Image (cartoon, rainbow, N blue to C red; front, side):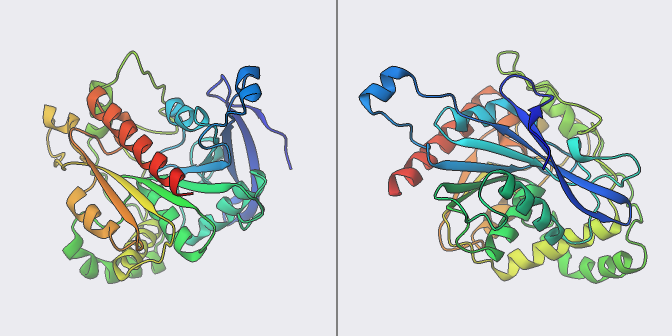
Length: 335
């Protein structure tokens, strides 16, 4: 295995390249980024004080047309004693190689290999169970869908699942059963056929409008373009198949926390309203779908939040972190 090297985020962040099985486009890799908690000071050690999440590993998975870049999110966890790991999946961000179709897979279960490699690099073994440390899965948007399906297929591995605006249902839920057969045919005969671009860049603009100079983030537009990456038929069918699995009901035994905006806004034209709502998903449908993930699901609705609740305007962002902290404290106290 390659060595951990300094990451593009600088500071305490390191990255490790994970070699995966080649596919029809050639060599394939994933990349795991880590941030570790600082050592306890002598005073804390002398007093025998421990941090709340010292026995916890967190694995973060990004969404579509995305990669990991949120330093503050990592530090939320390391500041409480957890080890934080983020995975740039194959053909995304740090893992994208020349000649590859960005983000392209035809089955979300393909990412089982990426996740297994990351868990092994975390010292947990490829199945994720070779450690006495608790595991929290943390996913955003498509990453939330991917991790939900993975957790359901791997019972007993995760101790908790936290989802930031997970893409659990198609934007027009009633149309999904009608669209799915057509998508399956397209995926079978022309998996790399590109759908028309419908993203006008308003979601990116909304994030820029609410950016906080006191809590800055830097984004590589080559890895997270202002307009979403091209959508291919094979990938779209994989997403609809995942949505159907959620609709049929998953079996995540671990407690689940879902963070969502309080409302959605349709991004057909620019307005300030897009800076206070989720312009990507229909959040009411996501909230309903979340209840099919497992027997213990908490849904937190955050007024004024964007699709990525942790990139919202100041008040909504602080509310999101406060709710996350409250839920994690309750979960940790239950053991």
